[in-house]
Image (cartoon, rainbow, N blue to C red; front, side, top):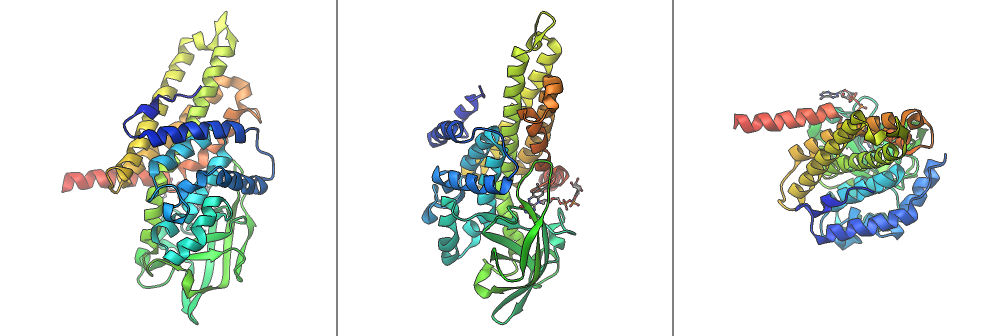
Length: 388
Ligand SMILES: Cc1cc2nc3c(=O)[nH]c(=O)nc-3n(C[C@H](O)[C@H](O)[C@H](O)COP(=O)(O)OP(=O)(O)OC[C@H]3O[C@@H](n4cnc5c(N)ncnc54)[C@H](O)[C@@H]3O)c2cc1C
């Protein structure tokens, strides 16, 4: 039984507690069973199911079919934590609807919002966020994909890689260089419908925890002027603002994986006979469990503090989000590793939850800003406070 006491913390109001209770019941009824081999079909089905359940309404603003007037990070984080505890793929499907449409919610015109967001909220259209390139990952400002102005629109050339939902998405929010200035200031955002002539999203990437993931290639892909998202030349800032909302929720997903690992390890330690008692009677196992509890609680405090700073204090939360993502993802890796250890040989056996958690957690320390990049953000904020 997962710890639910954190829901009494002052970061939440009653609507969050009610959301967590409803979602828990929904997950138990809708997310049973291990994943098969066809992650594309499973992901499409999960997006539909999440849409039918009303959960994707938390990914868009109320005026366009959503739940809250503006994106509520505490709700997003609670949903991700809960989904991740039940199913990594369900968390992925939910997260990408939010991240993929986030820049439209934050910066889209009314027409763009009306055209895309209600379908995202219902699970009718699948969204994706296309920023990373073969030669530009952490160093986002060096991206090279070019959108050249031509005939009342744009012609796009270049490539994006490691794009979640690549190949199954109905639309991509694409960041490309429009040349107003070098580096971060010369980038714009566009909405690209899948099937656009000149877009090839067929090259798939297989990773340790299977998700739909692809390289996108743009070969003189034509976009109408109406595809431009927000102000020209502001794409870098738009990408960072979108990531600011969702980075905290990556920490929440890691927290969900860690809580599941702790639950599994505790049940196993209590059930496994050892030395005339059970593993749970052993002081060294108890020490491991205590460290896992500490890591989970500390992550939860950091994740929901970061969400609360943004939702309630209305402040930019780059520092708090970086602390939350760094600690929650790094410590979840350690919690899950201990869970595998407590399971012994069974822990590395396919089909056992801690084995898939061990694979699921790894990428979270890399995407949406690697752990080392979060340290740069934290140190920069810390030093700026001392220097001012
Ligand atoms: C499963 C998965 C899903 C993804 N989904 C998406 C998506 O939907 N959309 C998208 O646009 N991208 C996506 N990505 C890409 C992801 O955002 C990048 O992998 C990430 O930004 C790191 O870039 P890179 O892989 O090029 O690594 P690099 O930038 O080459 O960095 C490699 C390593 O170098 C170190 N490093 C890099 N920069 C610094 C620094 N400034 N200071 C200190 N150390 C540093 C870190 O240890 C880092 O892990 C996804 C990646 C994965 C693995």
